[in-house]
Amino acid sequence: MSETISLRIGENNLELPVITGTENEKAIDISKLRDQTGYITLDPGFKNTGAAKSAITFLDGEKGILRYRGYAIEELASKSTFVEVAYLLIYGELPTGNELETFRMTVRRHTLIHEDMKKFFDGFPSKSHPMGLLSALVGALSAFYPESLNAHATEEEEDLTVIQLLAKMPTIVSWIYKKSLGHPLIYPSNDLDYVTNFLNMIFGQRTEQTEIDPVMVSAMNTLLILHADHEQNCSTSTVRIVGSSQANLFASISAGISALWGPLHGGANQAVIEMLEKIKNDGGDCDKWIAKAKDKNDPFRLMGFGHRVYKNFDPRAKIIKKACDEVLEKLGINDPVLEIAKKLENAALNDPYFIERKLYPNVDFYSGIIYRALGFPTDMFTVLFALGRLPGWIAQWREMRTNKEPIGRPRQVYVGAPERNYVDLAKR
Ligand code: CMC
Image (tube, rainbow, N blue to C red; front, top):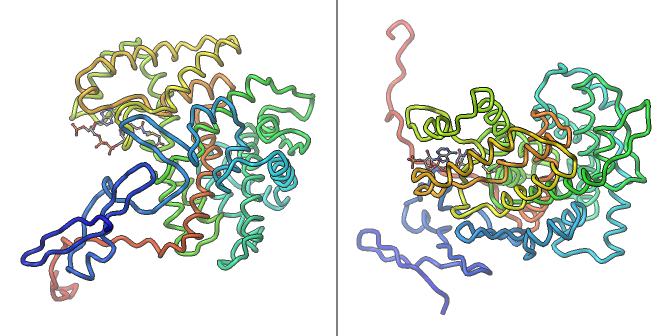
């Protein structure tokens, strides 16, 4: 007998089916609730609402576990590459040697973007925030690759759009950066691997041959892997819900990029460095800033701290903290904000306010210090998060389509004015 939960409404008893996940996670299936009782559920912020059955990423916030397709994030971060993880997330299994090589070669053949798209880069003010540009340019890809508009594309056609996006995103990101500097664009080099090619387009110069330091490539691979998916977060839910209207992949991911931009989500990595700089310039008194974060009359929050799901530790933050020490040492960089970050973390972890609320450093707390050490300016950090999250968004969009999920359309409880008569302008 399958498990059910009884719900009593007035005199009526309703048996609601229970869905059990691979890791014994339990959910009450309320899909027939309104039909059978007239009631809906209310859950602002979806704190208790499962929006999908998904086979992509498992995370246990209490135990600090994160797995992509069953593989622990710690193992993937130390043994895999970003491209292999992208394959794993999108297609569900680790590739064989041949599959990986074919995937790499196919992605490499699509790295160029339509030459006419370059005019867009010229149109934006050079000080534009890169996230606004990224969202606009990814959306604009649909204009240049209109085959993506077919909502009933074959698997092969859909796959081509996926490959195009994976391949063109590093080119778009690096061109946004080059334009902000007023530097000439560097074209992709298809003889380089995905991450080296990206760093070459970012840091390379037309005037001289640039050698990309393998330490930077390895650090970038790790960071991209750590960001590659995180189940139904704000931007991923956005991608799935936009895609559920049968909007094309470029439009869906463009919307996800906008959702990621906010400082409570991916934008936190930029906000963390800005906060650490402010604390440093203010004399480095961490206790003062901890007190501000605890003060309910002060809007300041400790950026890079707290998480909707992780209530023990964020496994990505652990890996990033270690990587941060290693990268700075290998690159011979002494960044004073790293000391402030460690002091702040230590003070917060020993403070009852943070302990009681289970607030720990999240993925964004140390990532910015590494990006900075690699040479990226602060406003590029969230764009790098987006580059890393791309395979996850794609995998989630594909899964939503494969599962033939219905259009996402939450309900509401209306609390506005009851019906009233229109009042003529002269009488108001
Ligand atoms: N500093 C101070 N207080 C905090 C913080 C913080 N960073 N985070 C949560 N709290 C308090 C909050 O005020 C509330 O206190 P009380 O119970 O007294 O009202 C309690 O902790 C619970 O917070 P919440 O806002 O209800 O929790 P949430 O699950 O809705 O929000 C969060 C999660 C990540 C938005 C929040 O912790 C936050 O704003 N953190 C700072 C921004 C940040 O680092 N975001 C990156 C998240 S991880 C990467 C990603 O998603 O992209």
